[in-house]
Image (tube, rainbow, N blue to C red; front, side, top):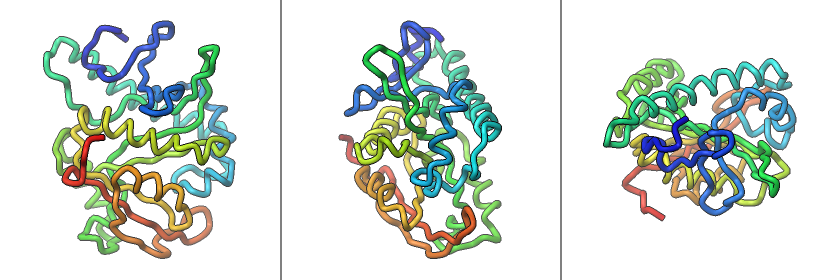
Amino acid sequence: MSMSNHQLRPLEINSTTKEPFLRLRKHTNIILTPPRLNDAESYLWPMNDPLVHEKLAGPPFPYTLDDSVKWLEGTKAATDRVLQELEDAGEDAELKIVGECPVRTIRQVMEDGTDMLIGDLGLMRCRHGELMNFGTVDWENKEKLQNENDTIEVGNPNIIWSMGDFVVSSHHGQGIMSDAVDTVMHEWAIPRMNVRHMWVSAYTDNPGSVKVFLKNGFKIKGTYENLLEAKGKMRGLHLLEWSVIDFVDH
């Protein structure tokens, strides 16, 4: 990875490992990096911790090493792809608009320079196609509506984006995720992906996640009780929305 490639801005480059990273705005000892394949075992504790996994829709439970390896292979391929795009555009004067964020793994940097995985924050196109029909619940057209959103050209302001995130339970209540969301939105999503519209969701029994997004300018768009089944029980969902018209740089 070229340390002089202006297309990586505002990312920094670790001078020893040559790995790009994004430092949080407030928690300056915490960074986001690309996924590493040797992170697999580090995900087993949080993904099997009820204080974490019960708030997440996607990961299976129990979460195995095979699950972790497969997930990391997929996410690393995606970040490698966008980093290669940025490398290939290195001679272009204008900063390239891309369709993904190349850093997502949240790490705490220790005093000796080593780091510890403490979470993840991924940007993706919204997966709630069932709610894209003017806010009504429409399972029949979920796939069609998601596909329409997925096929909009990169950089188009009409894309509905989303986020998925977690922090290990030992680091809950420290404002880390609020800072991470703020940093990723303002340092990468808005300027480097042209993100102008976002939906995020949180289970109705997860007020902490709702608070994170409210602090970052999101508004509750709707609440849907017993919307879906996850991990053996019906779950209600808060849908929160952010759009550029509500955006005030801070």
